[in-house]
Length: 293
Image (cartoon, rainbow, N blue to C red; front, side, top):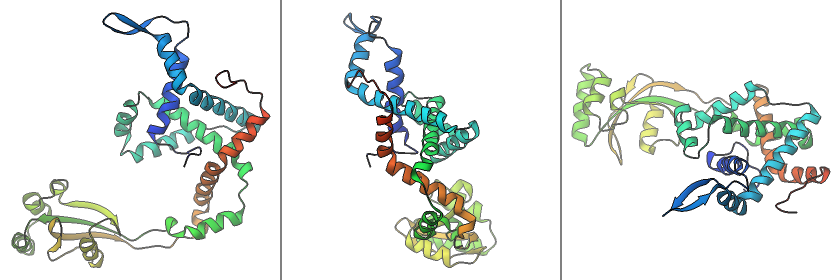
């Protein structure tokens, strides 16, 4: 989808943010050397000219769009609070497995936290200034909920641990030890070939349907809590499964999730209508663009 994309990936954010900083940071008259080849200098002015030719129009369009959004926000007296920006930032970092991993990713694009938060602020302001333009009704929200009801409900989940071994004979040996009262976690550390979980007692955490091998999943969902399975064969070998908890499926109730549904639908509609809205706003403003005029 080539429209304005909300909750963008780091890769799509990188170009306008990083290049805009470079383009603004270099002046056309700056002849400072930034690189050389066999003594032949490359200047900041040359870099700026090359960047402008390749990316200048795209970056400048982004900056103009952001300026329109800021002005519209001022007109409507709306703003993005620090708390809202921080909440969105935490969602970003969670998608990358935590802030440490997230920072590694953005650093590879020469970005920092402030770059990301500036993008988040623009996203939040866009949502707010376009809310009336989109004009969602209660019926719109209810219909969207009914069409996506399973998304908002609680899917059935199982919490389990496993011991993975290569052959059935070893699996039977493990079962004998467990039946004799030996500790599951200790046996996992000793026998399991799953290096990712063996030192954590074979813990797999919670998982829903469709996330595991079919035979493994069918066995786990059929088991009672605090029971241990017979050997279950998959392409990886033989599993001895211990179910430690279950979460039952729960159908969503509209009144409980309507605020979340509204926000999800608003995000979707703003993304769909952003290009049209922006084109209309550009007609309202006096815009001078020396790269395209």
